[in-house]
Amino acid sequence: MIKIFTIVQKELCAYFKSPIACIVLVVTVSVFNIFFYMIIDQNREATLRDVFQVMEFMFVFLVPLFTMRVFAEEKSTGTMEFLMTTPTSNTAIVVGKYLGSFLFFSLIVSTTLVYYLVIEYFGHPDRAATATGILGLWLEGGLFVAVGVLASSWTRSQVIAAISSYAILFSLYFSITFSKYVSAPAQEFLQYFSTMTHAANFSVGVVAPGDVVYYLSGIFCCLFLARISVENRLWR
Amino acid sequence: MIVAQNLTKNFGKVEALKDISFEIGRGEIVGFLGKNGAGKTTLMRILASYLSPTSGKVLIAGKDIARHSLFARRNIGYLPETPPLYTNMTVREYLKFAARLKDIPPARLRPSVDKVMDDCRLRYVQNRLIANLSKGYKQRIGIAQAIINDPEILILDEPTSGLDPVQIQQVRKLMKDIEYKRTVLLSTHILSEIEQTARRILIVNRGKIIVDQSVKGLLGQYPGLTLEDIFLELNPPQAERADD
Image (cartoon, rainbow over all chains, first blue to last red; front, side, top):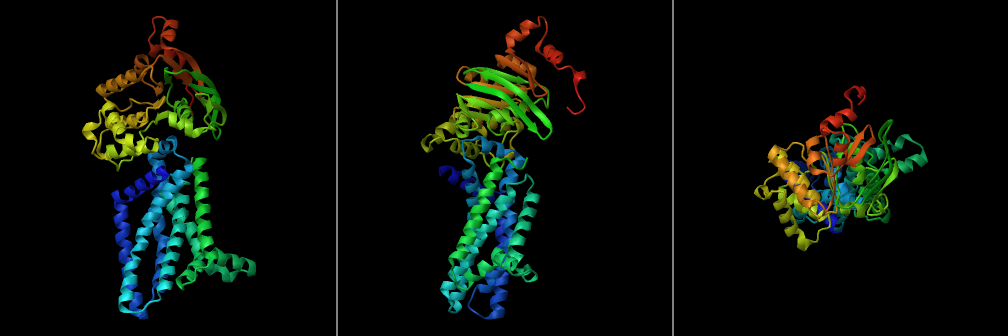
C-alpha cells in the first residue's frame, strides 16, 4: 500500500516537473472554456449535458497524450529495470501508475466544477443530472486512462503507445456509429461496447448499475492485462 | 548464497546462455569477464530476477527466485549497465524514492539516504537535478541506489564504465570496504579491475562459462602471463564469428 502511494506520488511529480502537465492543463481548460461559452451561448439552457459530450469526445484525443509515457518512457530510459528489481510487486507498480495518471485526469475533470458554479449563478440547473454527468465523465475517463496505461505497457515507444491507445479508444467510442450497418445481435453488442451509450445515461441523470459495472470492469480488465504484460516483459 | 543450476536463455533463435551452472558463497567477490555480447548482462539480469531463464533455476539463500521473487529482490542490490535514473529528480529525491521501494521504514529513510550519499560522495550534489550531472556522478548514484538497503548480495554490471581514474579508484575502495560483508558479483571487460577487486573469476564466452577459478589460481596456471594475455588466449580474436 505504501509502495502504491510512493509510485502515485512519483507519477504525479513526473507530470508536474515536465512541461506536459502545464501544456495539457492550459490547452484543455482553454478549449473547454471556449466550448462552454459557445454551447451555453447557443442553447441558452442551464445544463452542462452538451458540454460533457464535447469533453468526452476531447478526452479520446487527450488521454493518450499523457498516458503514453507511463510505461514506455521507463522502458526506453532503463528505469523499468530498476523498478522491477526492487521488492515491489507488479500489481503495485501497475496500480500506482494507473492511480497517478487517474489523479491527474481527475484534476482536469475538477475544472468543470467552475462551469457548474457559472450556470448555478445564472440559472436553475438540474443539480442531480450535473452531478451524475460529472461522475459519468470521471468514470469514462478512468477507463480511457486504463486503456492508455495498458497500451503503454506493450511497447518502449511512446508514439506506438499513443497510436495503439487511439486505435482502442476510437473503436470503443465510435463503435455505436457502426451499429446501424450490422444485424441485430452484433448491433446490440456494438451499442453496449460503446462508451458513448453509457455516458449518455449519466448525463441525463440516470446512474444504472449496468453502466457503472461496464466502466469498472473495463478498468479492471485493462489493468489486469497491463499486469500480465509487465510481468511477462511483453515489450521485448 | 547464490546457486545457478543449468541456466539457459534463448532470445528467439539466439542462445544467449547455454547450460550455465555455478555456486557463489557468502562474502565472495566474483568477477564476470567476457567480450561484449558474451552473455554477461543476460546472466546478471537473470540473477537479479529481471529476466526469467528459458530453463534452469537460481537459488538465493536456498530459495528459488522464480517462486520467491520478492525475497530475492529484497536481498539483492542491482546496478544495471546503464544506471537507471529518473533524470527529472534531484539526487536526494531519487535516493529517497529508491529507499521507499526497497522497504526501508519511514523513520530510517533520512539516515539511510544520508549515509549512502556520504559513502558514494554525493552530498555536494544532493539537491541538483540528475539530468545535469556528469556520467561519473550518475554512475555513483546508480551504485548508491543498489547499496541503500544494505543488501546481502550486490550485482554490478560494469560499475566503473564511464568513470575517470580517480573515480574508479573510489569505486574500488568502496568495493574493498564491503568485502566479507556482502557477496558481490561484478561484470566488466576491464581486466585490471578484476585483478584488483575480485577474488574469483568467471569467464563467459558465447553463453558458456569457460573458466571458473580464483584469480591467483588462474595466474598460477599460466606462469609469466598477465590476466590480459590469458584472456586473449582463451578468447582468440580469429574465433569471432560474423554474428557475434
